[in-house]
Length: 373
Image 1 (cartoon, rainbow, N blue to C red):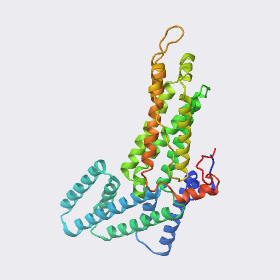
Image 2: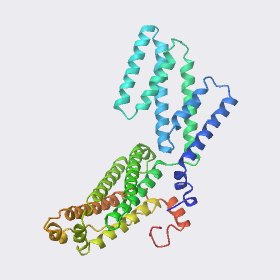
Image 3: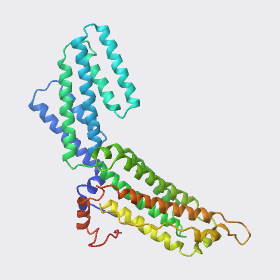
Image 4: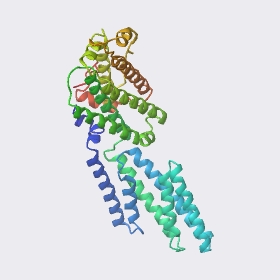
């Protein structure tokens, strides 16, 4: 499914995130260059360094805010500590000892705290203020001011110029993964041959996109739409679905006998098709910002148990794969139901902003939630 203008403020930005991020970065630096040109600011290059370091490879509002606040905190505390050493400690040797203690403590925090970047900026600011034995405290003050300006401009530009929210990125990645998992599941429930290389490529894409979702967790939490525990539950359930579909790929009938046994399980194909349809609905509703209305009916394995467990080929060989195949279908249904339940607890998951644009693009019909093809 191809979307463009309908999601100009979300999906469109996500699809073109590299170009949009470059545009935002250039605008932020242009603003800072203009400020440096208009005002004779000492050590003005630090404003540019701050903007580049904060925006860097982080295109999301939440990520930039996290890094910007950590940079401000670390710079302020490092400069304050350095200025205090210059004002109150006049013994150079003691200054150096206390500087090393401060840096050592900060470096320890980088390995034991979520504020590792703040600790790093604390060390850099401290060394900048006291490292050359210059008693002039203005260097620390100007560094703090320039970092404040550069970081502030970076945050404002990220938030105002075609803003890309980490929550939206996580939403689209989740929806796309559910779509791809559904496609892989459809392969599992048919007897048609499928390009194994293309299937492997889809599995790798799903895994890579899941890793990206995990990396966005802090930024999503910072934006305030999804609580950290809820997001962890979503990711854990999605990981379970990925693992189940991968196992289904491995437990496909390896003989015609196994396929015929599965085909003879009355009602199974209908249950599988229903699950596939609901996966498609979930993906569509997540992507377009609608409430999750999909309903999943758990697989009833009891009626298949005897036929699946006690089956032999014509040459008398027992087949064990059907039972495992059935169990994995049930596990996928259970995981899908849990995902729907968790998504329904996210108060801000439904998005009027996204659903309006989806409606205008005819991705949502009046009174219907049918996914477009």
